[in-house]
Image (tube, rainbow, N blue to C red; front, side, top):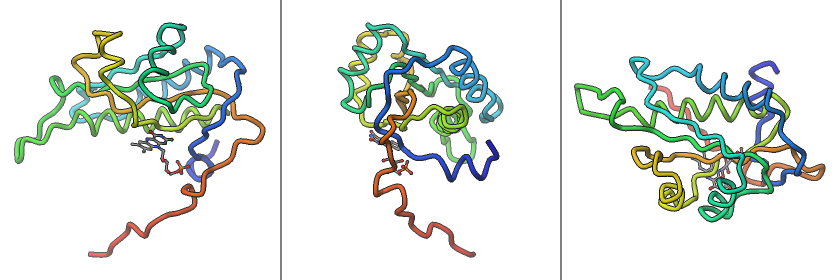
Length: 167
Ligand SMILES: Cc1cc2nc3c(=O)[nH]c(=O)nc-3n(C[C@H](O)[C@H](O)[C@H](O)COP(=O)(O)O)c2cc1C
């Protein structure tokens, strides 16, 4: 999809069907996400693809925002391994992971699937079940699936502030 159309067409889809998500689409989403730029190309990011019943059960325990998805992706940022700006010691792990997550989110939409960036979850629930997540700041869960026929953007989707200032 053309970029302008893609970003304007995307919305947080909160009603998914149980139609299976093809592996080729999962591969495409991962390829798009891993092509994201990161500071000094350190890539201090991890994407977990949750397809197993156990992983999906655990995600449902960590958040109520699952929307009927059959597949989930969890994005984590690893501070130890990220670029730190010398001028003010700012650690860029979350910035890097957010770019990866944004490219991932747009790729989901591009291949006809739908999702919502979910930030309201309990990371400790996931970390208890998956100790390899312990070194990461978990920034997003993406419930992924095909949109229900009556899925539509929420009212918030069209509420945009003027965020531009001239200096
Ligand atoms: C960092 C972040 C966290 C979010 N967390 C949640 C969430 O936990 N649950 C949810 O339903 N939507 C969540 N959203 C979706 C936002 O509510 C949504 O993007 C916003 O209202 C604008 O609507 P739109 O995505 O349809 O344009 C999150 C979005 C972002 C970027």
